[in-house]
Length: 215
Image (cartoon, rainbow, N blue to C red; front, side, top):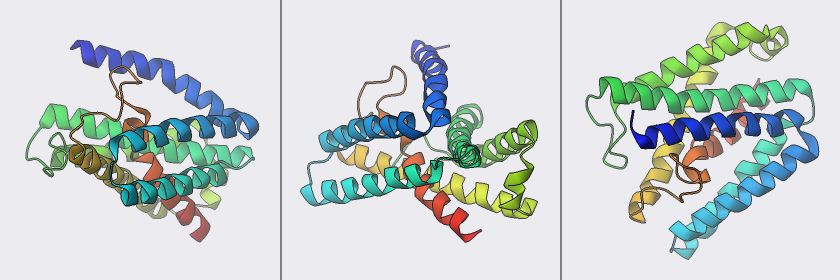
């Protein structure tokens, strides 16, 4: 196991409970958490983007995305569970892509992100679907079924969220490649910057909010 991978695991073990705490607490805690993450992310975006027009468009998108996160989390316990479902889908997408890509390798997906493979894409879908269904099974969330009446609907939503999350990863990778940088910062050992970790989430959250409004 490489030193970098060990740092990645250790950082995740420390960060996940902390992030979960703020999401669970909601209200002032979650709002403060959102503001801090937004400020750090904006600073990372500022440092990697020299084009003023693209920077402004990116900032508008970040504001829209974080506001969507605020609306999606809401104040109720059910909104917390739904928000957590979205986050789990994105995290599982990231982990599944990383693990399957490392194990099975295979053809590269795109030159934008050389580490992305077709096996990784498949792994993202498999792992996100598996983990979300496990999440729902463990918590026995029958009231979420009121929003997602059929298994086919749930599968479609997970597929869309996972796809958008992967697309967001590629979009940020494109701008990092244009800026000739590997990570948006070195804030999180083994992971890079905040933007490196939430690149898929900031795209998936607004889409998830839209999907839930349709249901």
